[in-house]
Length: 307
Image (cartoon, rainbow, N blue to C red; front, top):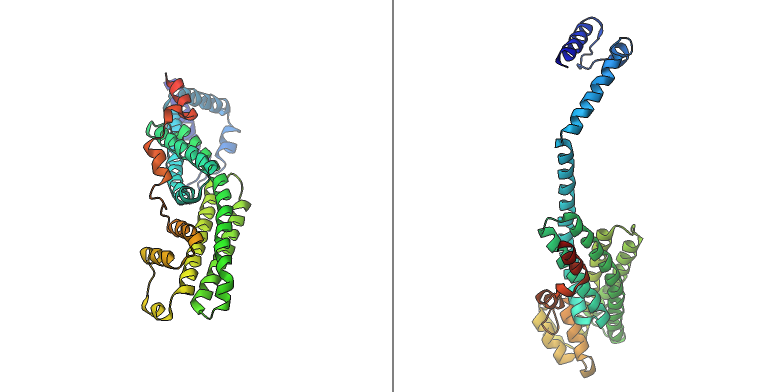
């Protein structure tokens, strides 16, 4: 084998001296056409390629490198997905905690548990399995976000419509401006939702980012509705004294100015617009404290397979 290699190298070297032209950039021209096709070395060229192929198959380094690259890619996708899901879940948590129905809370509980499982798989270096769960979480989040966004738009519109007639009749420019801003935010939220729905269905992360933008705008619309309530009832001399409304000041004015039958509604939506929990308990934290994964189907399947 070594003797054959020496002969090939010698013939190539001698031929290069005589026949190969070199451009200024150092590249050989027409080497294959002039050398292998017009000489008797063409069979040796195929034999050499075959030997290189055999050596590559016997050496697992190439396969190991490919497997390592695949694992690194799976890890990167899973890690980014887990970070995104924390963000997506956070912006839905207060809405589900404060205004979610039993059906909404069951769906959200499943999302949280599956997110916990995906984090568990990631810590076990099961990156592909973790990413599979990440995608399912995002798919379920899209369904729940879409439902809750429509519910929240209806709530915000209801709050603004209740106060609209009194605001339009008043001469308070601030209250009128809050009303315009509230309706503008709802209109913008609908546009964001439409854009998200127009994305390719498999672009889960991009759609959820748009849904979050819509959710933020709807919560701002709720804030404007509550500010209208205060502005319509606040004495003129007090309006001049207040430079900035914070959460506690607004809470006090809600208690003072809201009708008795609307007090709970205003207080609940005030808390929700600041991503706070009306009863002081986060639904997300409740599930994390007692996830009960032993009875969760995805985790049970994993335990059965690992036994």
